[in-house]
Amino acid sequence: MVPVVGGLYVRRARSREALAAIAAGTGALFAVRLGGAGMPWLDPTLTGICAAATVFLGFTLARGAAADTTEPQPGDRQRATDDGGR
Image (tube, rainbow, N blue to C red; front, side):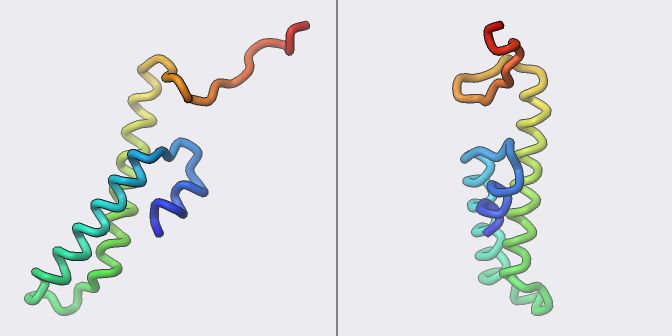
């Protein structure tokens, strides 16, 4: 759910962010479900969603900060800076 919503609302989102969010959310869900016997108040589904959202935003922000210091990569969207050939 988080990668789909993030992909719809964040322009800089790529597959790397989505895959990291899926892995983090699934890992957190199973960790709480299988190992959270001492914490019955902790909901595995909510924990997975929060972990996925945190990782998605973290990867997106880290990529944005790194993108400011590097050259454009093939496939990146570039803005037109010319006047249309006039």
